[in-house]
Structure formats: structure tokens, C-alpha cells
Image 1: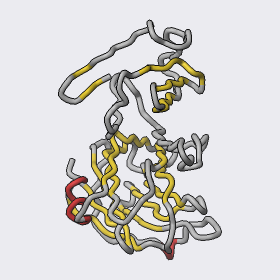
Image 2 (image 1 turned 45 degrees about the vertical axis):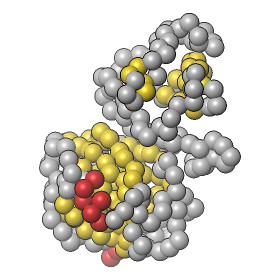
Image 3 (image 1 turned 30 degrees about the horizontal axis):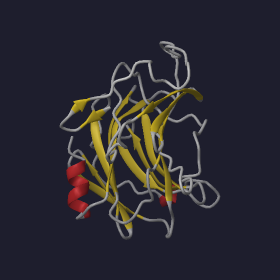
Image 4 (image 1 turned 180 degrees about the vertical axis):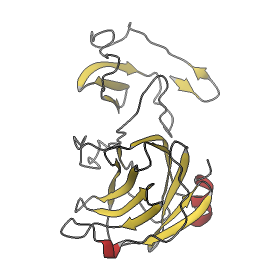
Length: 252
């Protein structure tokens, strides 16, 4: 366990595992799921839905602000948070749908919430990708932020009640700040009436909410058949003022 200002402490390799799991259940080149449950006395660790072991801590860890993944990961495609007690939130579980990246939000979005993502899009000139925010109640997208490298356009729209995306709802004004193969950082801020969006430290645009109230449960990223999209980091913030913070958090 790592404690700020104290370094790594209480290392365990095998002596205090509660169960005799395999030494290494992972295979190079194969995808896998890794889950950690923070309980009252320990972390419970699951690999591919099988209990691998548990790590008991002497003192309950201080507030966990972030999770870091080190090593030779090709790509992380799902990162989910789950509140287990007193109520499960969000209710959705791992989604088998094929997406480039998805993450359940760690808490309910309130006015002033900002999510900042460091991403990279790769592929041929016809590459496209979308960043979408999904409503918890209806399952529809309240914002689809779609980037088309071939047309050098960035469109914003939402999903109608029949689950369709209408061209008449799209907004395409604004510059094109994205480059294939180049890392970028984008921040979405939740205002009183609209999303505020900034890219690489500069205000980009806003997008009015299609309707209120709604509760965002999931963030999903999609690509077309030829594109590749990866999320390197993701942060949530909820202090103010909103616009200045959206721009600041999108600085790469």
C-alpha cells in the first residue's frame, strides 16, 4: 500500500492471501477484467470474475482520489466505479457492447461537474470517433460529440426518443483542433443549461441540454471500423468557477 509522504508499505506477495489463487492467471495478448472491492477491512481482488485474493490493511486507507495503471497495457477499454452500500449506483454492470472505451460515472453529475479526458485517435484519414454521455433513466445519449477527420468536422447532437440521431439536430460550428496520432485533452463541464467544452486549454463550444432533468450514468467512446481510439487518463472535478476550470483542465 502507498501512503503519500510515507511511500510503499505493507507489501504482500503471497503469505496473507485468504485463498490459494493461481500465481498468474493472465495470458499475454489476451484481454482480461480486473475488479477491486474496497471493504471494511480489506481489498477483495477479482480477475476474470474469479476471486483471486484479498489484501488486508492495518488502517482503512485515506480518501482514494485516483487509480493509476502501470506497465505494458495495450489499451484500457472499460473503467467502472460502483457504489455497493447502501445502494448500488449506478445499477448497470459491465457492458458487452463493443466500444472503444466506457466508464460508469463515479457519482451523480451536479451543476459544476467537469470530466477531463486525455485521448489519442489513430487511423487513416477516414477515421471517426465519438464521445457520448448516456442518460441513466432512458439509456439515450444526451450528448454525442462526433469527430470526422475526413470532413474535418465536429458535430454535437443528442438521441431522440426513438433512439435516432437527426441531422437537423446537429451543431457543427467551430474549428477543428484534432490531429490523428496526436494526444489531446478535452474537458466537458456541466452548466445550468448546457455542456461547456474545451480542447487543449482553449474554450471550444457549448451544447444546450436537450431536456432536463436527466441523470448521466455512463460515458462511452466509439470509433468507426477503421479508427482506433484510446483514453490515457480521465479526471472528475466539481469545484468552481466552471468555464475557467473547463479550460484549465483541458490543458495538455
